[in-house]
Each structure stands twice: as structure tokens, then as C-alpha cells.
Amino acid sequence: MTVIAATAIAVSVFVAFQVASELMEGQLRDTAQDQLRADARVLATSAERTGPARVPLPPYPGSGRLVRIVLPDGSTRTPAGQPALPPVSEPAGRVARGASADLMESTDGDEEGYVVYTLRAGDGAVQVAGLADDSPINQFGFGMLLIGLLCVAGGALVGRAVARAGLAPIDRLTAAAVRVARTRDLDAGIPDEGGGEIRRLVQSINDMLAALRDSRQAQRLLAEDAAHELKTPLTSLRLNVELLIRLDRRGTLDSALPAESRTRLLTDLGAQVAELSTLAAELTDLARGDVSDESTELLDLADVVVAAVTRARSRVPDVEVTLEVTSVWVNGRPAALQRAVLNLVDNAGKWSPPGRPVHVRLRAEGASGVIEVDDAGPGIDAADVPRVFDRFYRAAGARALPGSGLGLSIVQRVVDAHGGRATVARSARGGALLRVDLPAAASPAPVAPR
Image (cartoon, rainbow, N blue to C red; front, top):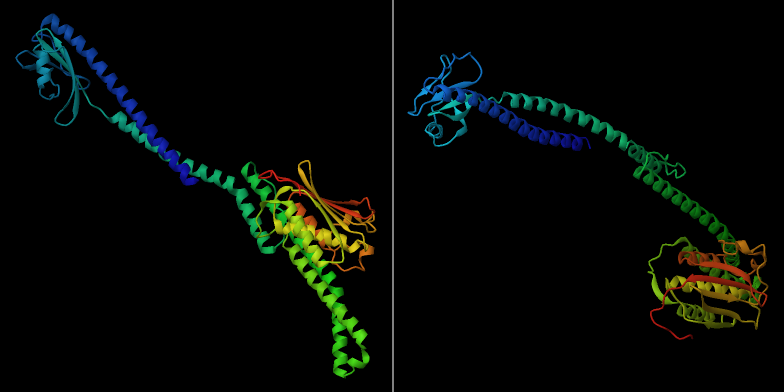
């Protein structure tokens, strides 16, 4: 910025000097020529009255204009003591012979140049000459040079000061960012100072730090909750395995554990391993957050719901699931939406009593696609409703059932990522009614209801 300011001032001074010099030179030239014409007219009046050969010429005073009388035969008369002028030029001779009225010309003398004005007077001509003096232009140029250097130096100093003052918030912002990167202290906000773009930049970085702070807090809570949830099944699994190893080493496995007990223990181990596998998969899916390689596409939500229900029926064949869907087009990630619907159906299947099916419905409602999953179970207590979609939360009545408490949390995350809303209520059959509203999109072509 300092270099730019100094360069801009230097260019401005140079352009101003060129323009001013041209204007000043033209003004001085016009003034000098006008003075020569005026003096020539006075001398021409005397020459016409007395004749060019007899007009009196006072001695040269030592300075000032130079005069000369040009006679028709080409001879000249000059005042006594006057410096010699350059020879009469051919155009000036033609003026003396009556070929033209006047002539303004520049000539070169022995040492200096002259501006000579020739004016017809009687049967000859008078010439008035002045030195072509460039000293005022040179003095003006020297003055402009000094002023330009001062302006460039001053502009560089001012530009540097303005640049340092303007970039001071950036320096402090950089130092704060380096400090945060070095200390990993995301709670240290950056002071909101400056204005315009600087203030918006500071606010954006503070917003980014707040988002990172929330992300780190969520990560810490996820790790703490995961450690807590993994502790119980791992402890039970370890105790059962240690029991089997100890009995096997003693050689009393068959006597200490009858076939029925051994079968029950192995079944318990299989259930615990399955629970750990499910929990690990759900933790992995939840830890990914909104980061996914799956792209968003225009899809028929009915296809997603049908695929999810088909998977649920194969996983829990003893739970009956009824399906009632209508084509609703949305912009979304098909795999994520299918996982969310599958979790809703799995959750309802845990509570559905034998012989009472789980109802799954999909319909268009206004500008939304609505998915409803209800069961005929005991329903959700009012005290548990606000925390149904929290991670690892399990109601008191659900703690004896298999599950990790992450299924509905994953549903909430998927729905939020698609700009929708998940709610819970009591169904008409007395059980839980889980509802998901997703923004609908225009269908590519009319499709008949299923």
C-alpha cells in the first residue's frame, strides 16, 4: 500500500507538471508575442510617418527588446550598441518587399535563440525581437520537482501509516488465530473491532470457533456416552467368557455347566455380541454426523419406505408390519432415509404386542411428505417425550429390552439433515405414534398412487 500510494502520487505530480508546463509555456509565449506585436506596431507607425530609412532609432539601453529596420533592398538599420540579430530570413525579406503583412518566427543567434516579429511598414519592414527565455519554465519545473519529491515522500509516509492502522486488526486477528491454533483453546474469542469487512471477518471466525467448540463438546459427550453404554455389555461378556475359560482349564466345564445352562450361557454371549455389534454400527453412523459420501438426489419416498419395511420384516419376522404408501417425491439421500425409516419400524417392533401389527403410512400433506409409524404398545410417558430423540436415552420400561438408545437419535439427525421435523405422540391404538415430516419436491412426472 505504501508503494502504491507513493507511485500514485508520483504519477499524479508528473501528469500535473506536464499539463501545467504546457499551459505555462503557451501562456508565456502568447504574452511575449503579443508584446512584440504591440512594440512593432508603435515602431511601424513611426516608420510609415518618416520612412523606414529615416525613422530615428535611439541607442540600445543595454537590455530589453531588440529592433531592426529592413529596407526594400535587403539592407538593415539597428540602434547603436545593440547586439547583432541573426540575418534577415527569406520570409522576412518578402514581408519587407510587400509580399505579406507580417511574420512571427523563431531564429537562432550566435549564443541564444530569438523570437522575431516582422511587420510591414511603408516601403520596408520593422522587426522586434526578444530572447527565447526558458528560465521561467525551468524554474517552474525545478519547483515542481521539489514539490513532487516532497509529495511522494509524504504520501509514502501517510500511506504506510494508513496501511499499518488499517491492517492492525488483521495483525491482531492473525495473532489470535495463531494463539488458538497453538493452545487449542476454542473458548478464547477474538475481540470484535474494526468496521466493514474486518468486522465481518472477525464475526465469521468467531462463529467458526463457536461451531468448532460445539462440535468438540458433542464429540466429548459422544465419547463419554459411548464409554458408558459399552461398559455394561463388555463387563457381562468378559465375565461370561472368563467363567467358561476358568471351568475349561479346571476340566469341570461339563460337570459345572449342564447342557441347558451351557446353551443358555452361549445364547447370552451371542446376544451380547450382537448388541455390541449393533451399538458399534450405530456409534459409527452417529459419529459421522452430517458428513456423508452419499449425494442428494430426487427420489420417490415410497420406494425408500417400502425397502425399509422389507428389511424390517426380514430382520424381525415375528412382527407384522402393514404398509400404506403414496408416491411423494423429495430431495434426499436414499440410504440415510432408509436407515431412519428402518429405525422407526425397529423401535415400534420392540413394543408391538403379539398379534398387533405395526402400521407404516406415507402420504403427502401440503408441501410435506409425512411418514407415520405407530404401534399398539404401552406408548411413551409424557415425561419421556422431550428426550425420546436424545442419544443413549432409554425410558425406564425400555431398559430391559435390547437396544442402545441410538436408533431414534439417528432418525433425528437424518431428518434434521433433510430439513424436516420428527415428532412423537400417542396413536389411536394407545401406543406410540412417531411422525416424520420432510419437504416435498415436484415430481418429475405424474405417478399414480400405489
